[in-house]
Image (cartoon, rainbow, N blue to C red):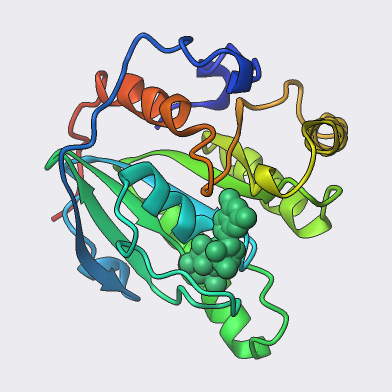
Length: 228
Ligand SMILES: Nc1nc2c(ncn2[C@@H]2O[C@H](COP(=O)(O)OP(=O)(O)OP(=O)(O)O)[C@@H](O)[C@H]2O)c(=O)[nH]1
Ligand SMILES: [Mg+2]
């Protein structure tokens, strides 16, 4: 697992789409499985990227945008649509993982506790997980639940990047203001701002940058030791 400090360049990629030398073309993207049991996940022999964030933040839409496959991950206007750990195999080579959203207000207490335990175990134990993409709604000022989740990832030493979603919904200025506020809030507990991307699933903003980022990590992927 890479550490946060491995990602040294924390620049804003919206204005610098040629930054990554790696340009990834998506040739195939297929749904593999949905799970609630860690023991039933595919063997951890391919690089894996987890997409996580508050319910309705746009995780499934982003996955469809990145893969250019509209119906691949199920999206919904009703929060709480994604309930399982969903694996999607990309280019027969690496996995995108769509996770259930956190902070869904209408979920029962026991469901929230189940979610929390299951996701935290998955993130903490998954040998092939390369990076967690934490999605943040770019329209909102920093939310406690997002900051707490980032802090938990930091405590566990898990590498993560921030993906600000739905940038098409407001002006660039407003997005930049919210990103700056998030940065300020994170710097209360982190030494550096993690790498971040500004995205829109409507306009494809951020697509090349995220795929380039993933492609560059994939190049160094080695199959980890794992218990079968
Ligand atoms: N305008 C705009 N709408 C978006 C964008 N991304 C997502 N949406 C909308 O936001 C709603 C939620 O999107 P989803 O992709 O289902 O969100 P999710 O995070 O997967 O939600 P859960 O699975 O319920 O946790 C849908 O109505 C999407 O069409 C975006 O970049 N721009
Ligand atoms: Mg979803």
